[in-house]
Amino acid sequence: MNLENINKILHGNALIELKKLPAESVDCIITSPPYWSLRDYKVDGQLGTEKTIDEYFGNLIKVFDECKRVLKKEGTCFVVLGDTYSGSSNEVIPDK
Picture: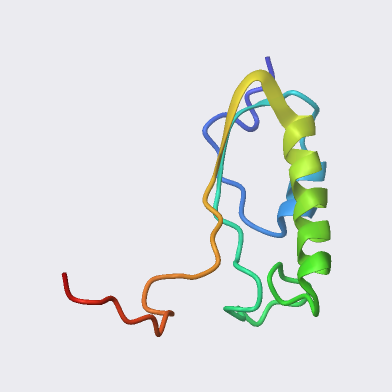
């Protein structure tokens, strides 16, 4: 068993980091990809700054294809994906 990646948090461009891992070598993936067109972390090529929603989903698909490749058959993938973040909405909630 290769212990190099045991209990390791990977930090970096998800697509690049995932491609470094062997197939079916990961037990758990936990991710919250940047939402489209809501935040700019000032990192070249970051997810969420694509010009169109189709480009955004295309890039997410590339990342999750790699997630599927590296995830063990009995592995788990947790994804938090939405269209907003706390405090970003101007929605008015009516009184009950």
